[in-house]
Image (cartoon, rainbow, N blue to C red; front, side):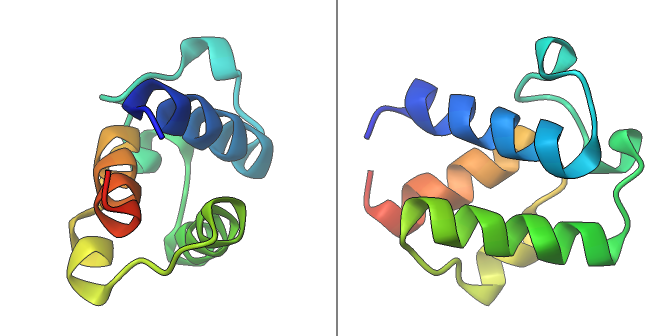
Length: 80
């Protein structure tokens, strides 16, 4: 799966879960700036894992601060 495809899905899921405008989101967008708390991030990680059919490891989860970080973690989990 291409990085751009992963990013598009991450943006869509984040926009839906956090009620944000997808048009204003990119790889540098911080989840914190969208008002996400730790519970929101847990829900998002679950949504990412369901969408991509892969489990994100604990090391990757600790590093997720931005949409780009989430894309990196998913790409790594998918072996992309």
